Length: 252
Image 1 (cartoon, rainbow, N blue to C red):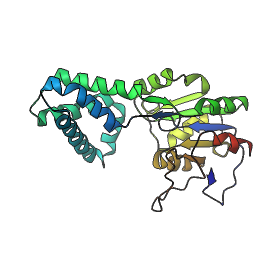
Image 2: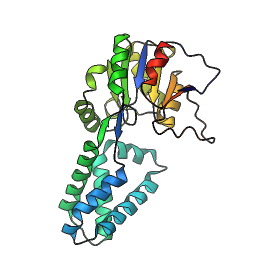
Image 3: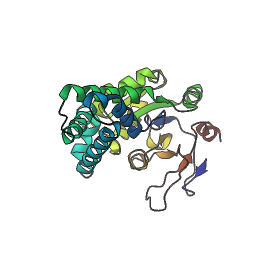
Image 4: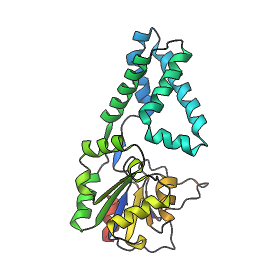
């Protein structure tokens, strides 16, 4: 645990805003590993090698990422229509291999999403930290981008809803991080002012820079321990590598 902004004094909050994916929920399998497993499962039925199918999926995905890289509207669609965009990637990959098969493409996306669910788990100490916050009567908000159906399913699967006074999901509130309006809405629902709350997130642009626009004290969850790059312009107020460190911050 370390302070990054030496000039800013930390004060005990009345509430906390948490990101979900990458903070409270982690995954034990990367997207590439999930697609590789899908390729191994479906390649025989398509009369392909697993390697050829996986490489086609990777090429299609990389091409798709380049297409949306500088298009905010397409990035929004990517978050809000995940099944449709994944299906397009798979169909393009199959077409490149001369294996046009709509039903198989749909099955592949379903298989991929099941793998993502299977390999998702609560971050170490996540529930302990939430319980600690509740014991201290702190107001809590969950602030997450993405499709409401997908995000609500994750929340239900991991029993997160009961811990939070407010849940703000991009599709439901009509605005996404890093737009300051979503943080302001969270504060309003918690009946707090910005100086009374902290934001905990893993994405320096969406979570940290976005929250700083409304004056929240920010804590960057660096689970990998990679640290900040020298080129990064975003300066979180604090950095933690384990969620349990939040308990120490709240009692310091």
